[in-house]
Image (cartoon, rainbow, N blue to C red; front, side, top):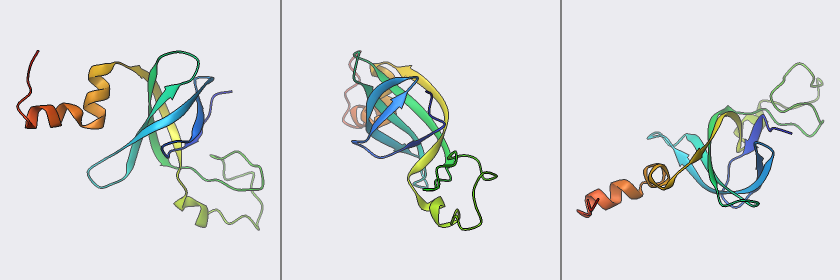
Length: 117
């Protein structure tokens, strides 16, 4: 089952494209907003990048995390917008170069003058 929202915090077990993995790193924009997560898959040696959107609505009533219309009057949806659950926008497999770029390692290498090809 493909997740429509995921908990974006390092160390959390999650499912990406039906495969189990662990969130290893969370990316942010320059304003500190979460933009994505790097997930290491358990069953094969692969890293996935999950592009994340807005905070997802979560509630203990069991309604779908991204749908407001199935909640009850007693559900406190506004307070739940501060959660770490984020809407999943896209998923793609990444290679070493993209991993370095997403984590800032490429910038660090350039800053140290390590531009060995």
